[in-house]
Length: 243
Ligand code: UDP
Image (cartoon, rainbow, N blue to C red; front, side, top):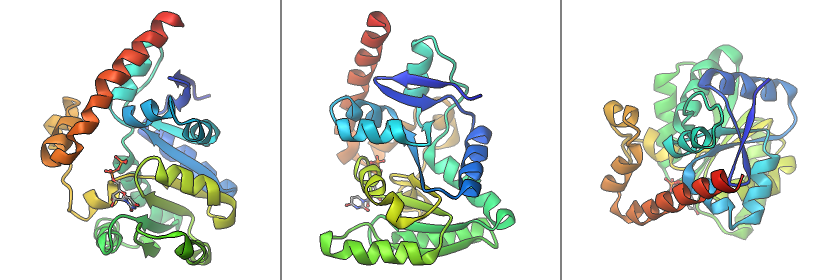
């Protein structure tokens, strides 16, 4: 039985990477449209003032602890949280298993051309993988029915949506049943990383839990987002004190 830890009103699953992969495999086998979210500190903080996002996350079938902030928060609250399950790593683990399990992926999101580059990368890393469709993440309301039809007709088992937080979660929640894909995951900037447009932090920095610092250094436009971290720390501390 996997524990759920409440962090700022959102339930996060206390899973290891292998438990997360197993859970996704079960959801694919079950076949009912399910949402999987990767909760980092920024997302959890946003959910404190975005009720729609909070409701969506609490209805998700799996919420993995993405990022050092989420793991820290759970432990600070005195709860068990085995390890960090980064969205980009979860995608990679699922892709590695995909050829053997015959799972089909659809990659939706990021700037034009990026999902196609990420697809090529996935095909190199995981020979035999079936990526049954790609679509960039820049669209207007008039394009939506075409996008939904494209995804639905692809008969994918896993939809990776890289539209950023909270757009991807809201879009997926709104169309989950129409799309009829067993597992939909919001994966943020993962396609940019896979396509080589944005670099992942070196391993030593990931291990030192400094990936956030690396991303801020590389994309200074993101640096403002770091302000979320002290706010997150304060709110979690308040939750601890107030119970
Ligand atoms: N994006 C998109 N459509 C949009 C806005 C953003 O496809 O309307 C993409 C953007 O190109 C990038 C990803 O969403 O690939 C968001 O990446 P980011 O690292 O900002 O993700 P987050 O931190 O929000 O998880």
